[in-house]
Structures are given as structure tokens and as C-alpha cells.
Amino acid sequence: MGASITSARSLMRMGKFIGDGPKLLKIISTAQKGGLQSLPLAKIIEFFRVIGNSLYIMGDNAAFFAKHKVLLTSADPKLITKGAKIAQFWGFFLAAVLDLFALQVALKKRAADPTASCAEGKAALMALAKDLSDTLVAMATVGYLREIWHPTTLTSGALTCVSGGVATYLNWEKTKKK
Image (cartoon, rainbow, N blue to C red; front, side, top):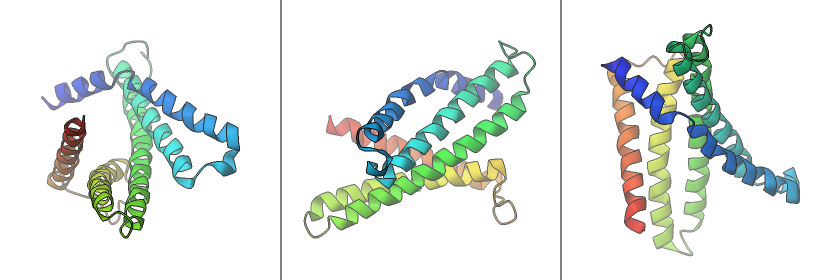
């Protein structure tokens, strides 16, 4: 059953990296207009976060093809998956860093606009909880800091549930605003 779910998720991600192209092009275009020094640090971090996400999805797609002997008949799906998971970790880690930037921006608005500050702070904290959960699970998967972080499957499962629950809530909140 677990293998079927994994394959289904891989199929749902198939080609999803294409959506990251416009995000990267927009950041590159901004850098070309004003120079790299004109980009805020958050935009540079976002660029590398999107690259991590894209590399993960491309790796996941390649691993799926290798596993099912489509196109990549001689490739090692486990090796491809390992590389993809490393990219995924860095994408999640950088997303958490961006959440901290968003929290800082929200906190700076406290005096001028407490209502907006509270709403933006809540959204940033929710996103941070999701991205930190994802980062911790991916960190265990790739073996980073394995001497101090070796969660049980129950812990990894709970963190994955936190991430999924928060992601669902944040997406639901977006639909309410439309």
C-alpha cells in the first residue's frame, strides 16, 4: 500500500517543476534590471529555495522513471532519490528561513498596523511550523545531524501530519479570501 501511495504522489508531481520556471525568471529579470545587489536577501534565498524544489521534483520524476524502467532503464532509482531528497531538504530549510523573514516583517508592523501585523504574523508562524516539520523529516531522511536527530517513524509521521494539516489549513484560508 505504501509503495502505491508513493507512486501516486510521484505521478501527481510529474512535471510540476515547470511551474517553478516563471518564479525563477521573475527573480532573474529583477536582478538583470537593477543588478544582483538590488535584490533583497529574501529574493536570493527564494531563488535557491525554488531551485531546491525544482531539483527535488525533477529527481522524483527521474526516480519514478528509473524504478519503472521507463526511459531511464539503467539508472539507480535509490541514488536518484537520495539526490532528490537532499534538494528537498534545502528547499524546505530555505522556506523556513523565508518564513522567519516574513515573521520579522509582520512584527515590524505592530505599531503601525496591529491587525495586519497579527494576521501576517499568524500566517508566518503557521508556515514556519509546516516548513520546520518538513525540514526535520527531510533532515532525518538524508542523514544530516544523525548523531543528534534520529526520529522514530512515529515522530516522522507526526511531523508529516503537522505539515499536511497546516498546509491544508493555509490553502483553505486562501480560498476563503477569494
